[in-house]
Image (tube, rainbow, N blue to C red; front, side):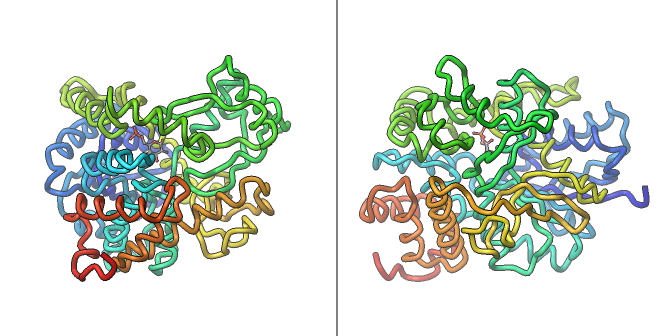
Length: 445
Ligand code: G6P
């Protein structure tokens, strides 16, 4: 081990932090992070202190020499960092609740990543990410940025298009969740399963599935299509089953988020019902977070509590820490991440971000070319890519008409007029986090 590493985690007060700390502890022997700087904004100070104290207890209990620092000073945390991870949420869960609730009023699914909600999450998040990169250029120009902040695909696209930051990887736990789900269906350990992933973030497909190196795609599709079994999903997305003949005809594995596009009416009905009864996902998570932070306060707690697995981002630490370790150790193993396409998927522009299996080297992810996506799903993937690109442009320019185009071309949005109504209401609702839209007069309003 030559040197002890410095890692800065922006949004360190997140309830997911124990995931990350657990991952670092498990891998200390191969990934010697000596300093972990958890950064948050003043509004998140209380959460930062609670989760930071738990992180310190976890490290102490594990007996690993990781110093945990808590700070509201982002620049101090970034100074000299080797790895920067981002897991913040501009406007918190309150903003997410608006992203989910306002579209429902118009009979549209909000979807906080690839739907109208995702557009607004991107508009709030991208300027902050670009600001972080400006700080990184000055304070830690050699550091890697590992982004978990949603919409991870759109954020990666924005970084690749609007900055010179080459050392950026977008990360998501959907692929690892799919692999674990498939392993469970097959009744085997997850490390015996390999999936060829390709697509975009929250729009990724499993093209081929292998068990111990032998292709089992058809068998897995049969298992998922069986209505008597529960399929593969995440905690935040309800499993409504699939039309067996549709899946068998599609011949590739959809990801849990595809339910919003292939089962729109059913998912909308579910979301409308949930909004009336238990609340939207953001509202459910607000409650879950309260409970988690109560647990985190317990001075006797010194491990990641299993209740954290109720969150959709479960196992994020495994994805994040194994990625960082593979970069650091030049492992050249295969992991699905968001990176520059460079021709890996033929029908997506070379310079755009895609989520695809990559060989992870010390110089970053090298995407594995798949040729092209099956024709049946190619168009939807391209449409979401167009949505991400136009949304990223709107986030950077603060241009009203560009934002309206992004909203209207989203496949979940039924018309230009509804798009405009939602856009206007959401701009107003999120005003305090969207300075780029309010420094100018709305020309088209
Ligand atoms: C999934 C996604 C994450 C997302 C999370 C939401 O696992 O991959 O990108 O942040 O779910 O989970 P939550 O518990 O906040 O609804």
